[in-house]
Length: 103
Image 1 (tube, rainbow, N blue to C red):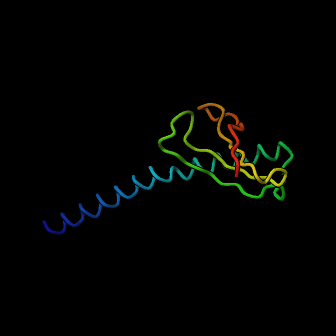
Image 2: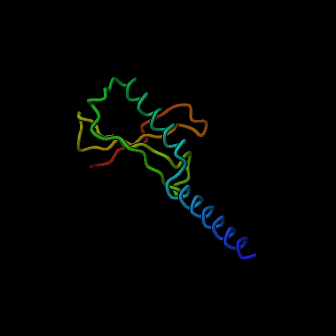
Image 3: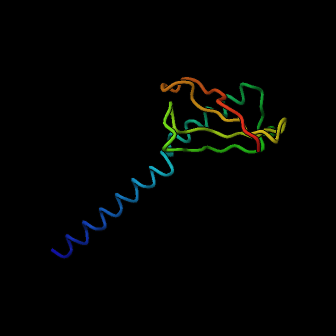
């Protein structure tokens, strides 16, 4: 009885932590997918690895819309601007620039 209670508490705690982690940080597979697609898009736009100062994914569980994942990119040609990229539709067929922000 005691060991069953302890096991249940451990199982509940682990499950709660994993659900919380996925809610806060998102799905690693989704993050990798949008990052890879954005890098490919930038390559098509003639950007090389050396042209990119900073690139990182962002996740906002409360954002909603097509996809709560996005990519922030800073390039050497305009280092004071952050370019924001995301999917153009929920089928994830193409990466598009969805906005800009000052750095």
